[in-house]
Amino acid sequence: MASVLQDFSDALALTVEQAGPAVVRVEARRRLPASGIVWSAAGVIVTAHHVVEQDDNIGIGLHDGRTLSARLLGRDPTTDVAVLQAQPGNGQAPLAAPTWADPANLHVGHLALALGRLGQRVLATFGIVSAVGESWRTPAGGEVDHYLQSDVAMYPGFSGGPLVDAAGQIIGMNTSAMLRGISLTIPAPTLRRVVETILAHGRVRRGYLGVSAQAARLPALLAQQLNQETGLLLGSVEADGPAAKAGLFMGDTIISLDGQPVRHLDDLMALLTGERVGRSVPVQIVRGGQLQSLAVLIGERSA
Image (cartoon, helix red, strand yellow):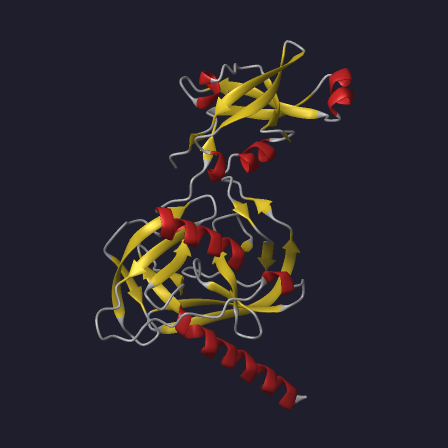
């Protein structure tokens, strides 16, 4: 029994040793530094948006003791992702990019390690994957490809660091800011989509209408006709916003956008993608008990 435990312990230590070089220290706020993950050997770093409080004069601490300067390339608050560019310098060794795991192969009960970097030391906590789900929308409206929750302890400074599987591959980036009291991991496919968009465009585009709304039940006959029980009742419409310019008013109920049903606020947020920014799309509403169709030019959210 003792040898089995020793072998298991040695395997965990080896996993940390293998993944550790890709974990960096991120000094981008006044208080405790956070962690980050090497995205590319050329110095691209991915970390958590909520730990980056400045755009430049950011310090990156590497596993070999080097400290590099970095700047912010862009961020996506809706998925809590920030992308940094470190400056390795001429003649210096490239950064250690990790191997990324496919979250589709991950199941509840799989072992996982959360890693962080404090000073030159890599820190680790151990647990299991406690929940795996389908794609979901964050409270800020971001789209995440897989819901991943673990029971690893998220100590101060661990946000922005990786969740690592038993093979030493990085599953995704840990964040303690998305849902209070829950250790969530932004999976590799979401990171890839966000990072590539930021590298190409400097930001992640998000659409907006300029409304506040809540789900409301439709009249019984209309619900039966539409095969849809609820729509989105507009509580306010921002002056000169896209919705107002399209002729939408407070009290209207949106039931579809661009041909897709809108039953709840999450449905609307899911449809306000970057691809729809700048496009005129049909919106179907209920006004005074009657169905109407308008066209709205989707705006771009500034933050």
